[in-house]
View 1 (cartoon, helix red, strand yellow):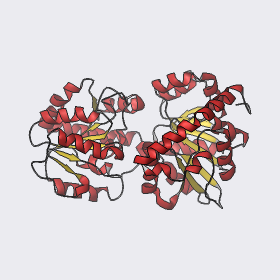
View 2 (cartoon, rainbow, N blue to C red):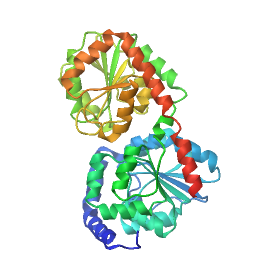
View 3 (cartoon, rainbow, N blue to C red):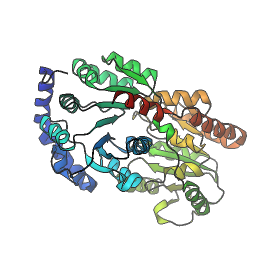
Amino acid sequence: MNKRSWRITLYSCLLYLLAPFVLARLLIRGRSQPGYLKFPQQRFGYGYPKVNAPIIWIHAVSVGETRGSLPLVEALEQLYPNHTLLLTHMTAAGWDTGQGLLGNRVIQCWLPYDLPGACRRFLSHFSPHAGLLLETEIWFNLINYAQQTHTPIFLVNARLSESSLNKYKHFKRLSCEALLSLHGIIAQSHDDAARFKQLGAADICVAGNIKFDISPPDDIQDLIDHFRSLIGNRRIWLAASTREGEEKIILNIAKQLPEGILTIIVPRHPQRFSEVAHLIKSSGFRMQQRNDKDEVEPSTQIWLGNSMGEMYGYYGISDLALIGGSLLPFGGQNLIEAAAVGTPTLVGAYTFNFSQVVQDAIKAGATIQVSNPDEFVPLITELFNTPNKLHKMQIAAKNFTRNHMGATNRIMKYIQERL
């Protein structure tokens, strides 16, 4: 990328015009999620902590990327013990997830908005030895100034859906300049790599998905046992990481299932817990909530998973899980956590955010995709009535995870060769 191409200058001018609206949106979000108002000056490149050690920087925009960064953090801690790890986010949920998973093992900050001055101040303050941007984080000014300061930036565990590709095609020349300025792109799949090449990227390695390398927490069995002590031996299906509008579909499914099956609903975003609880009650279901910490009554139809950091536990007690974000056009959430504990999964029609993972899971027999929501009730009923089918899916899920491990080692080898 040239020092200041006319394209990036125009892009920067547009960002400056939008900055007041972005700041207003930040303040509005902060009313319902106070985490967004933490260290607001960092959004503009000010107020960062002093660090007296060389830094390796990882950017994980939100919850999924932050969880996915864990294998990288562990590998970097072993390979670079004298470095401090800096973890940046854009969302409050991502920050909270990082704090819960990593505590004081890393320094956490906000990545500044992609304004020229903010990016310059961020890179000047930390002077990272290297930067790893997870998944689809293409920030034009950030990458431009990283190149100017000779800071190696890698796009790691990179993925690019068809919808994202079409959006970036509107800025193809600018996207091409940014991608060519990266020190390397490490894609999840060959399909992702092909889409990046359509934008003009050249140096691309395919390493697989690091999320397969995430091990369930050591104490996960204790949590599963605790959940089982609360619920008993009921048959369970889980609607995991649900998004706005999907709970109505899920409640309609739950209404038609055979009596005695417990439905667990875990919304994707914690700020929606109260909203979903109100929806369940107003729909006439007998509901209890995880945070009440009470035993689940035999008559309870819905258990609302209104807790954070316990997703493996919910998967671990469930006979079957529906992956949220796939019933409506949100693009789906990741099914790898479910597969890691051997939970069979169902997905809806909209899985474009994780298309390769879903395709591979279907081939492995670990998941079933359903295009019409009306098909869920007979399918779930059939699976519960034929335990042998569920058992085969459980085995397939574990094998699916095991067969796709190793991306972290391939990523670290690639980065070490280029640093």
